[in-house]
Amino acid sequence: MNVASILAAGVGRRFGAEVPKQFVEVLNKPVLAYTLEVFQQSPEIDAIQIVCQPEQRDRVIGVARDYKITKLRWITSGGSSCPASIRSGFCALRDDLADDDAVVLHMGVSPLVSRGDIAASIALCREKGCCFTMHPVRICMARRGGEGWTEQDAPKEDFIELNTPWAFRYGDVYALYRRLDEAGRRLSETDYTLSLWLAAGRRAWYVPGSEAGRLKITTPHDRDLFEGWLLLQQKRQVETL
Image (tube, rainbow, N blue to C red):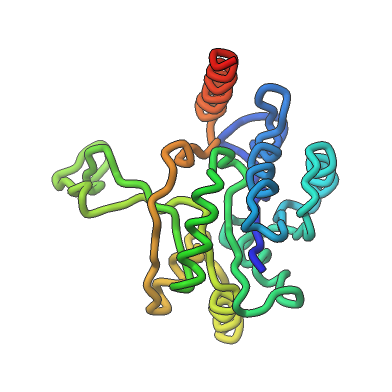
């Protein structure tokens, strides 16, 4: 089984809207709905889990109903941070998934993920145990020095951006969280699945991601970019008629 775990537990403090950013509407449709539709339409995805805050559960149910997300199978309560929400999602699936099943993590505020990104991530995960979506770094970089200054550049050729979707073999990641629990170690706000994976001595594999998939709606400017992209697609459809 291939399960999409959609993270929609953020509160959107940086966005500044009356509702969390995943529920902000763009062209009269919630951002989360755009994201869910891609996974609903992806033949590789068998079921969908949404991780959200308990007080947003009814809103999530409404989005799934209104936009016919029939693959939705689980709604799981998130944690106080993104890493905690990811862990909550993984652990909640324990009774329903086999160790060899694949879980595809994706941010609910990244609506331009492509079906090709999803398929490629799952394919490499099946072979290697995990897969991240990669984008090359295209801007100049430098190592942070003090406040307002730097004295050392960081060659962009030495770095890549890792983006969602992230795909993992379920049993491998569940074992990481079990070991943390057994050691009595609490997750920090930087204990993302990638960090835990690498700390366990595992190699992280990646595939190139689609260019549009870089967009993550974190600020009002990101929302405007997404709206512009949608309007451009509408314009192109009209021009081809």
